[in-house]
Amino acid sequence: MVLRVDPEIIGINNRDLRTFTTDLKITEHLAKLIPSEKIIVSESGISTRKHINTVSKCGVTAVLVGEALVTSEDIASSVKLLTEQNDLHR
Image 1 (cartoon, rainbow, N blue to C red):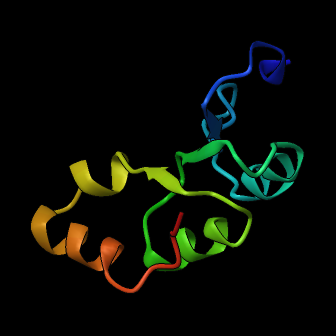
Image 2 (cartoon, one colour; image 1 turned 180 degrees about the horizontal axis):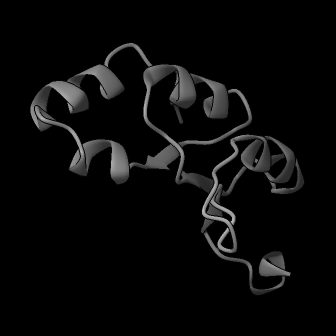
């Protein structure tokens, strides 16, 4: 449905809004349906570099990280861990 309006950026929410659980398999499944020229953002459930690398293999070029940072005791270190040596590329 979202592809009908031809957006440049498409966000995929990994959170089930009924149960509030997250599952990166949502991104893995839906990213396959999005044309490669689109910017894909994986949203929710991203808290480690491994998560970023997992979704990047599906064509994701950006991630939205929230809870992992706001609950961190050292936000700067958490950002550094998330952004070092990940596979996101354009």
